[in-house]
Amino acid sequence: QVRLVESGGGLVQAGGSLRLSCAASGLTFSNYIMGWFRQAPGKEREFVAAITNIGGTVYNTDSVKGRFTISKDNAKNTVSLQMNSLKPEDTAVYYCAARRASSTSPQFNYWGQGTQVTVSS
Image (tube, rainbow, N blue to C red; front, side, top):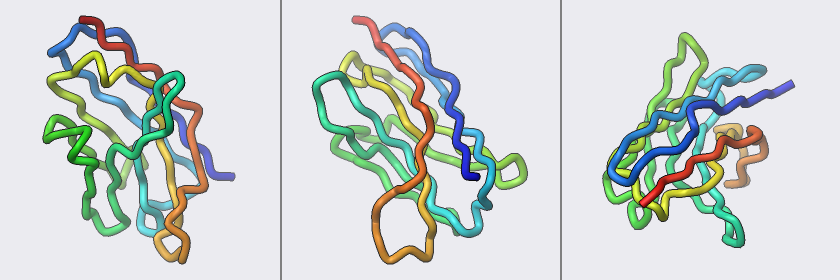
């Protein structure tokens, strides 16, 4: 019922920019918190950013350091992640995720298929 589809990944040189998009269906942003995570081979999945049902944002500042921006378009049911000043350590599969804002659990229980981001040195 809930479907999340990421797009916008690719190969980019260090210092470049990419914009990832997540098309959501089967949910309304007024009831869900949306997030971005990433996972590199051999590493644990890492939280990147989230945006709440009312528009508040949270970032993993240790990893992002002001370079990434999360946003959403309620009319189009899409969530975006603007990534600037990319570094080789940003290389990972990036996942869109969702959870109900009313849930007592902090877990994101809906996930997209992921999109590959590769940053060359």
